[in-house]
Length: 357
Image (tube, rainbow, N blue to C red; front, side):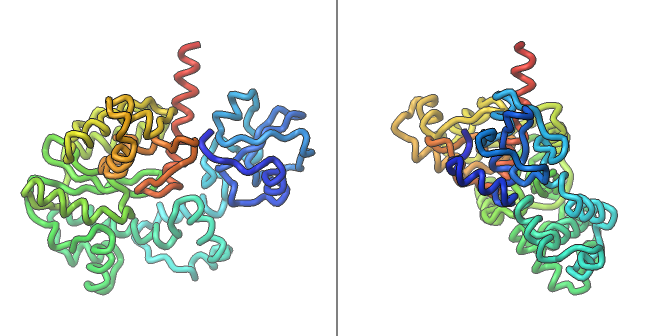
């Protein structure tokens, strides 16, 4: 079990109340219909004695339940929310538009409810997501060796200082400091769980982090110091390869990554990161299990620190490591992403089990 679920009575109350706090965290299997649902499902509520609660979609399927066609529990919750879907579609059509809460209200939605929904599904508000997308536009412009003012205008910022501040807050660097031709290239990669920054040499991927990770700017500084190389925005073969592999991963077609990696850490940390890559998609390990596997059963805390210091998210799957009691623990990209990644990977677990059969 991935989560420490409350008792049956508490979960049944949450089901009756359609408590959004449990959406994607707990699921209910109904014995009289053979169907499993989200706790927020709008369908008629079953009797308590006909309900069994689970912590994951995989557990529901393993127990013999099939997904509800009304609340679609196998789909990411965001795809089931019409408001979220419409706003994401609008953002894709106008990525350089300066969205405001007035725009949200004009579309017929309550801005406060939208803030809540987006934070629950993505860990950020719609307006924060829109600002990230605008900054992505500036990355594209700067990668073509254009002027900073062109990047500023493409991102929809009227003020140079506001652009520098937003850019600096995101990755801890001013846009002008990332121009030029350097060995290490910084690229922007969009994923269903948020935008990521990839830092690559001509042959290897050094950093792959979500842009809202607080430690990103520190990681960039450390990489520059260790490699004695400057950074600039631009394309690279490893970034293009990992972009394609991430696309296949999120599309559900391939959980494997072959992009060459450069580990910048101690020999112990490298041994932990190498072991993380051996954890199959759709499964999890505890810190103690990792420590035992690498021959250091007394180093559970050190394993946890190395896991947290991983700078190549998803590809080096530190999200597959959980606490001994089965609960989720800290993740630099946010616990909501860790939960989503584990849910996504249940598809690979189910497919692997089907191949064996």
